[in-house]
Image 1 (cartoon, helix red, strand yellow):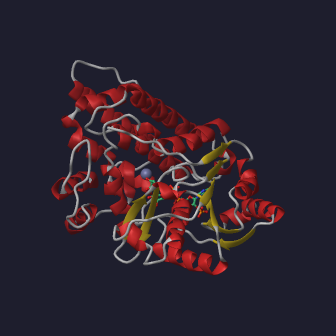
Image 2 (tube, rainbow, N blue to C red):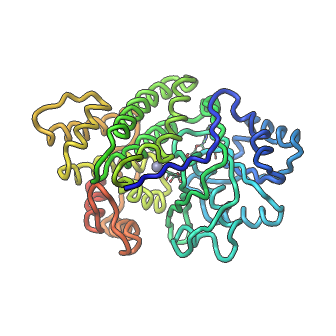
Image 3 (cartoon, rainbow, N blue to C red):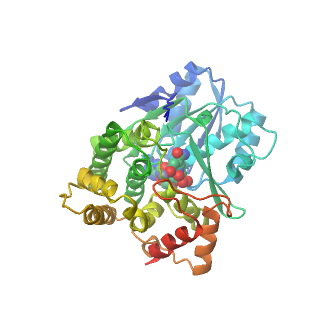
Length: 394
Ligand code: NZQ
Ligand code: ZN
């Protein structure tokens, strides 16, 4: 099988990276930019002025659109498309975390192709044929959206959260200054750490042949992120820890970790989680840790060696003669790690208590209303998904 790595994003990593925004936009030929952001935090911290001053110096005009919420909504995307069209925007600059970037990507899709509603790209009714260019100033290490081919949007009508994946939306540049993440609160630091780890684990778990190099890179990344997540929590201004997390965020989700493998990866936990954040508006990283061990315990007997290898590589778990026992220890070790960074390991700890009826609805949505199964390590249909949600309830 041929695997592909397409990384058109010019990444600048280090102190003051955000000061290169003007230069990058000039190189991209941007004339009028939509600057997209979340809360007024980026304004009050002075980051926005730093950005707009550069655009003023370059003679590039701009309009601002803030208000992106975590689990970004399609209603603001629609507003952004209308605003950008009216203003004659030719480039979108996202200043924030994954939600802001994903909202910017959705606006970029909608601007390129206005023949229908932008939600069509997320519901699967239409396939994007292109996208306006976007650039990123990242303020939160987590999703990898700064290099990924993915954008995840929530439709308030039906509380549906759906992703759209194409190479068109990969950012043209990503400016990564670890210092901009010093203010990320502990909970979001942990959510980010977990999400970065999951992007590599989703790719690590599949049923095909794997490339030794990709396995080794995955284990190194997971170990580094686990250690630096703890360091960033104990000292939020630990520059090296924040830098490791930031770069790992990008590498975990740009496609590198699956190169040479026979399958793209499992992605069940993400698909199961997206329904949770769609319905209950929980943080993505926390939703992932709340269900991961229940997924792992449901599937590990299919290939315990895969789990055992990961546990030994990431947490130094001593191997025994029993891959099954080692796999169980590995699952426990990941669960304990998530608990140690104050992430939930059950739906109860996540703060939700779905009824049997709601679990049925979640599972039905995860199968796209009966249109798909999920998973590559193990294929999961609706009953299996329900069993995982139920086991995660605790
Ligand atoms: O509104 P602001 O001020 O930006 O506040 C955010 C938000 O409240 C805050 N924050 C960000 N940077 C900060 C900061 N607070 C203080 N200091 C800073 N420097 O953190 C909160 C969470 O931000 P958000 O962008 O929602 O978090 P994250 O980056 O984890 O993004 C989550 C979204 O991305 C999707 C998730 O499903 C979720 O919707 N994902 C996107 C992916 C992709 N496009 O490739 C892949 C992922 O698997 C994921 O699904
Ligand atoms: Zn994720």
